[in-house]
Length: 123
Image (cartoon, rainbow, N blue to C red; front, top):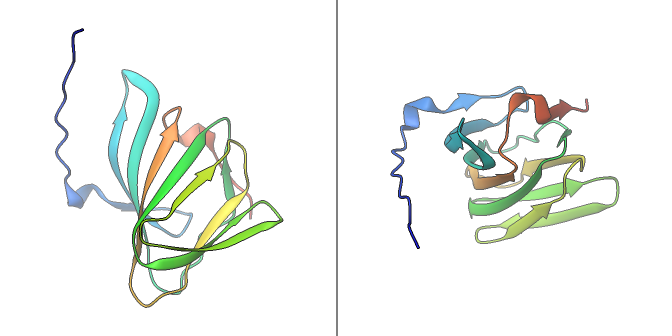
């Protein structure tokens, strides 16, 4: 079996602020491999992200630091903290709030890879 290895260098200066009210740093999102993407999200204390959904794209959040509350659809609300994993099905309305005093930082794994056309603001 042959393995292809790639090395990705993270440049923190590439982080950007979104209309969703969070900071995003794309870690892996390749034009030649649309099967998956990985980003780091950062939500400031007291901030609740905008209601949104990703069309035809599933997400998994892995909470690195901080604490918060995630809302999925109309019926699911759950407190989250470091080391929690949240699976978000495609097309699911969602938002997350930082309920702590430090930044809420988490990894976002998307399948297929995130692109601007899959994002739909719901506010």
